[in-house]
Image (cartoon, rainbow, N blue to C red):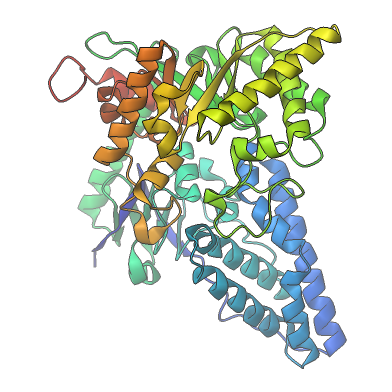
Amino acid sequence: MEQRIVGRAASDGLAIGPAVILRALEAASRAKGSIAEEHAALAAAVVRARQAVAELIERLEGDAAELIGFQMALLEDDALTEAAYARIERGAAADLAWRAAMAEEIAGYESADDEYFRARAADLADIRDRVLRHLFGLGDDGELPSGAIIVARDLAPSTFLGVDWSKGGGIALGEGSPTSHVAMLARGRGVPMVVGLGQAWERLTGQVLVDGGRAVVVVDPSPELLLSARAEGDELMHRKANAIARQCEPALTRDGTAVAVLVNISGPADMTTVPARACDGVGLARTEFLTANLLRDEEAQYRAYAELVRWADGRPVTIRTLDAGGDKPIPGYTLDGESNPFLGLRGLRLSLRHPDIFRVQLRALARAAVLGPLKVMLPMVTNVAELDAARGHWRAVLDELAGGNVAFAEPAFGIMVEVPAAALAAQHFAADFFSIGTNDLTQYATAASRDGAEVADYADVLHPGVLAMIAHVVGAGRARGVDVSICGDAAGDVRAIPALLKAGVRALSVSPGLLPQVKAAIRELDLARRGEGA
């Protein structure tokens, strides 16, 4: 019998397929050996799990790889296995010892005061299950049926990234958040996703329909519903195909207002998603791909920036300086043990703590600016003194390059506006441009973590207070005569675009996969009509 379950919309689209429930392997078992054998079995399982995560990271690029770097760091930490080995020494089987040790770790994360750590409990559960699968001789998740609907309590980014979504499929989660990293990945890849289904997720079996736009999951949909859903799905595919066919055309509203649509780049793979001519430039190029061994490698950084500038082919490229910290740790660079990483040493704050590393990046950026219109963006700026300090390093680097007869150019020097204090005081920043990071701006302004399922409804970019700050930054930019853009997740949310344009925004930077539909959404708007624009 057809059963409808309402959750929260996380990623638009329709998917119909067999439900595949990802559980924590509660029913699996194995024969127990001697203490030495159990110790060796757990050690081997951890090594194989570590290798699987490393192989996954190698297949990914940019922020996708960084999202599961946390798992690798944990698997390489001997402290994670000490408690399990101690239980084995007292006579426990390897799988039971591992379950118990990880249950304590997960409980600690879930009960943490900081929302960031509570959200990371899903990664720990993923690590637990990876090791258990190897202990039971099951390997990793294996091939999922084509077009399967993944059903789980929550989903770690590594699990999402290990699925071939080109075959279709969708996601239905008991918990999760529309602003989580997995939801962002799903939207970027066009995977329908509904979260917040509660305990009902455990009853999702058989054929399932996921309606991401309406936030509904239907178990055993009727023939009539399947027929209408498939027709609607075909229409969505048709509209998507039309949007892709027109992706190289300018984004003009019905009343003729031009809106620049740029792309966010996290790594080389993103440059293959859309042709450069389809975008108006790169609004955000992340440099968190810089691992600890690349932070001091000026030549490697220069080559990466040069490749991006050449790809843009004369279009502006905005490269953000290292935005480490928060949920993007870099061993040996970021601080360990911060009680609240999102409110700690992040972005520019860390760069100013490591001026030698900061200057290496600035040198590489200045050299790459010779090749095309490159712009440098500073993340997590809070006060004018930080911008002044960064400019001091910038001037010193340019003097060094000039003295060494090294070819360089001086690009625009702007800031990312993602701290509410900076947004409200934007008129005081003598930056060459402003780029609004709506993800952090929203979570700081609403006191609601982007990964917090319990507070997901609060983390809304359409909150009047958040929109008021965006409008204030736009006004400050106009008064100073500098460009203002949005590079956060809201720029690719077609439901938020009308409000953003009404607030005065005229430049959006989105994930490459979202560019066609964002342009299509803009073309549907008439800013001259009351209620649709400023």
